[in-house]
Amino acid sequence: MDDGSYSSSGPIFVLVPIDDAARHATELDANYDHQYYDQNGNLVGLLVNLSSSEKTVYTLGRPGPSGDLPDLHISEARPRRGSPHIFPLHASFQLVPETGAVLLWDHSSTNSVKPFGAPNSWGYTVKFRSESSPRSVLVARGINTHIAFASGSNNTKLCQFEIQWQAEGMYDFHKDEPYFVGPQESRTKRYVQNMKLGGGSYGTVYSALDAETGKMIAVKRFHNLSGKHLTFATREVDNLKKKALRQHPHILRILDSAGGGEKDDWGEIFMPLKKGNLKDLCETMQTEEDRWALSQQVLYQILLALDCLTDNDVVHRDVKPDNILFDFDEDGNYQFCLGDFGLSNDPERAITAAGTEPFMAPEICYRKKQTTKVDIWSLFATIVWMRNSQFRAACSRLRALDLHKWIISISKTAGYEPIRAMASHDPKKRPSAKRQLDILDSGEYEEYGEEEGDPGDLLSAQFAQAMSLQGDSSQSYGSGSAGYPTSPEMAYYEPYASGLYTGYGGAGGMKGGDYVPPPMGTDEAPRRVSYLFNFNEKNSYIVLTCQLKAWVSPYGNAYAPPQSRDSDEGTVMPEIRTAVPTIAEGDGFTYEEYMEERRRLKGKNRGGI
Image (cartoon, rainbow, N blue to C red; front, side):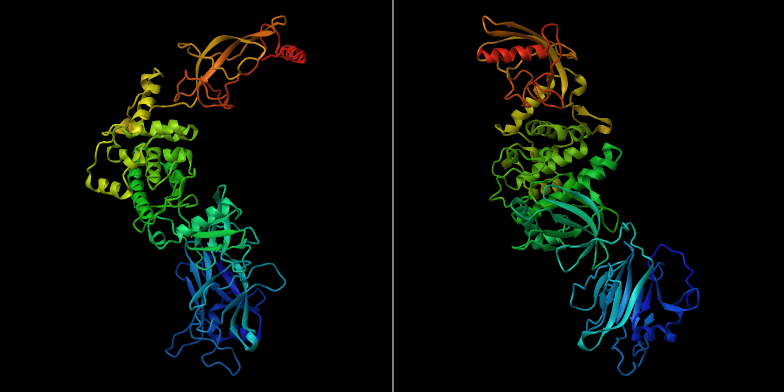
């Protein structure tokens, strides 16, 4: 007997009888220890207390022939004539310790346990997905609020109870009610949505509670299954459903999928929920030594995944820290797996641009034919990102060509000898995943760049030459503390030089894209731009004298003409990324006076700037 006094954050609920069969079961003497009374001494129902780790399962049924007794009796040992048929082990409630969720199990061979929602009230009915016994389904506040443990003639519900929650459990789960149960478009509900984890142009990922297992999963919901969205969604599901990929320990497994049919404009895939991704994990580490050690594990495990992809003719095309997920094995060791196959493709038809720029292989950037070797480059870039703080800080702001130069240069520093061939500009010279695994296992490798003609050698030389223009010995390559290689500290934009420029615009006007080469040797560019406008209406030209503030990308040639006004080549302004300087008042005409005179000249068909 329970008087209702308890205090716990674990799941506790009362089974309140609705029909005569349920009331009769509640009053059985065999249920005395579980009968729950209100403050007035009235019998309310049967208490199920799963708040203690010592008791995580409550069985329901009747006494068995061998003398086995259930925790809760919903029938006598010898049922009365006309009473519902109850098996010795008929049903059970089970706590899922990791999440605090409660599962209802149907152990009957006749599938007679039926959860349902309250009539004419908010709440959800989530049915059993399996037809075979035993089978399980989630019960929670507002989800499967009622249970019928037996069926009568014409499939009528018998032995009905309502679940009244005293404490729900559901650890680390938002308690906004009503819960969102999905998929919304499907009659078969599979999960209870929790929080958004991330998303992109093709889909959004949520954490959710699996309605069959009570464990947390990840749900990827595609935004719009039409056009390229349909292509990416279908491709991801098809690739992840390949048997070899589903069984590989370092490839994110797909649990199930919904939607995505010919007539559907929606689709979802369900995957295990991991602890996090490599990007977040690295950001929590305090030292480069820790990241360097971790990179060895990532390298080996993801190479195993890439080897499996190669055997199955799959190119991932978006290997990066965000798409490498981690968890822990039974011994507490890191387990990494490769996920997000939305950009994956068949190597025979992979020619489109895809991926994330800091980790893109050169052939992706230049839209050349792609093979599984693009993933080898991306994995090397990921390892560099882990080991090198300067690369982590600057890589997202650099152009592809500059990134390729930098990565190739880093590959030639100490510590990268066994894997530097992965950074070959020529994909044919990169090792396969299988070959690279053999190199790591044997410790035998060939020196990178021995063969002449590799475009990577030229890129590396160009990068080194660009670095020599900086004139700062502190930015040369070397080793950091503890002997770990470092690369130069690189700012994306830096002030280069300033100068005076006088241009003449005739009837055709000045060339607005003309490059102004600043003289070398100036430490800092001016903070202000001055213009002097002088008009000669008779000869129909304008003399413009302007003082420029020039900014250059340290990875490009500072003295090369820009390809266009907004180009990243040559001079650029920070933030607005344009070579056009900001206008300010000078010592001659004001800018407003100049524009007025310019309009007057154009009205006379005299031309201007």
